[in-house]
Length: 367
Image (cartoon, rainbow, N blue to C red; front, top):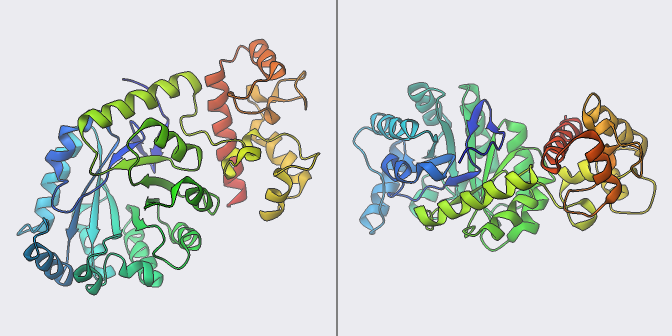
């Protein structure tokens, strides 16, 4: 399958928007290699990297949990990463640390070829007592310091969280983005896509949605409400992953923008401003613009600037004289479709262009 999702984290090209999430003591390089053809990110670990977290991992192992307890953590991770890189998957290492210095030291040893995922997700008491896992969600200032320690080292940083543990996940996501985190990996538990949308609307951070997303319909719901990728753990078998990848690829071939949001008037997230018409009538657009302190005139200017020099400038016979204001491809519209035919644009190309408009609008809004 050679579908181009045009999906990047930093400068790393991701071949498909599916990741395998880490499971303690289970996901290593060999695990990722065995499903590599179906995924874009392989998250291994979690690895305890300093004295306190290693002690916690030993305690968990004594209690019957599988844990990674290599004699030399750095050398073991290097070996696992080599397996993943050889399989064409971008490696992510989930890390449990008790202090920011441990993270900085690890980054110095391993370099910037991998993505570092801070484990703020583990809810096992020994790991919480070691100032890792969910401890970080109750002490966001410590989590922010962990992120900053890694970013100073010049590496890509993911943060894995569990929804509903921090006092305010939306505010936390915004703080993590401002601190430099590149990825927010969210175990949504039972909160669903409406919860995800709130987080998407808070910042442009790259989002991986996790928890029981093992069918295309579930994946599509997450994509339509703000997820850039989905991740699977317990159901990350070849059959499930293969089915998901094939269906996502087919959808992308037909519709272009693989994680296009719903339209704003149908509950879409902030990215759906790319589909909004001119702000000339009462609709969800006006309060959304007010929320982000954007005047109607500014919105019109932002839209026209975003499509300048692209085929979306065209569309004189559309409702507002430009494809910039036209809706999603799944909404029937004879004026839009006639303009697309006149411009020689496939609907999938139109949607890809709308994706670029969305990126430009978000860059303006969150600059």
